[in-house]
Image (tube, rainbow, N blue to C red; front, side):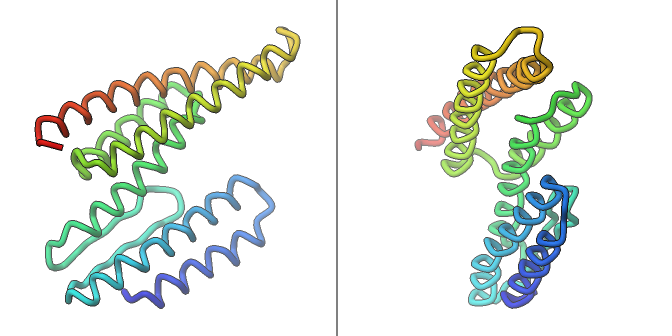
Length: 184
């Protein structure tokens, strides 16, 4: 894989996104294109240090990476992107079984990254995003009748966000403790 392959794949994703009518599919393809563009820097870094890197993203599941030389920068990059993706999906998912699956996947990816300041910042960003969305939903709920279908959906979404925030705050405290033990 070389930087041009990454750029070409990003362009293909953007072209496909333009043809999509479904907003979720369009947004997912744009996010995938962004991930490929982010990967350009890592591939260039691998090229300058002599590492061979391979990565793929199937559009639905997590990214996968293999580094023939054992360098972990590519694996950490992929794990961080997957963590961000699973965290965002967790904020929006109301199905309990799907939430459990997303939580498991999120924990697996975050374990791959390890306790880093970058992960702590990402988790704190997720918490702040939850708080912002919760404030917006509370305002929406306050402005509408309680029996309105939109209000019912907003309340369910608010409960999902509250659960996500608690999960992320607990994880944030664990990360802070681990980083403190490691001298950060």
